[in-house]
Image (cartoon, rainbow, N blue to C red; front, side, top):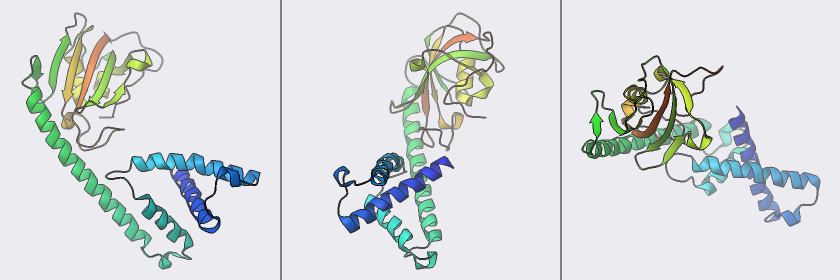
Length: 251
């Protein structure tokens, strides 16, 4: 609801800016004459900047901002929906078809990248491929307890895409993350259960053992993901409210 509200406000601010410029020429800070002018301009800067960043996340190629603003103007000028050059239903269908097309392309490309990456990775020294398809590489062998599916564990981790882009890490937060082994994605859970306290490992997790064709934060659909994990402690003393890693989905 909050995001929808901000988007609506952003649209109004952009539209107000467009119509003002059309009537009065380009508006600048120097042309502000009253408190209402100033706060209106400030609102436009604030929400316009936020809306700009939202547009950068829109799937596929960058949005044509001129066409976007033209659509705003047409929608606001029309006395009723029947007067629009494109119906609201058609607009929604066009957007849905576009997003679906872009998503399908992303999934196809990421599957191809996964196949190539795993084919190369499996031949690297020290990489074990489990029956499920997880690629496990020990970096440092642990000597302590081994986790079970029901264990709580403390870990340090960094998660990245196969192109090296980091999507999550607790390292900068300065303390290990505590969570239940059965509460994370299957590939991560399996990898943790192969480790002992004090150990470090690299887990290359195919999409089917991670998020499949779904999206998770900044992880694109169909992505193979990689974690470097340190198993700090198995079944530690429990705090009042155990934490969970940022990448955690429900199974």
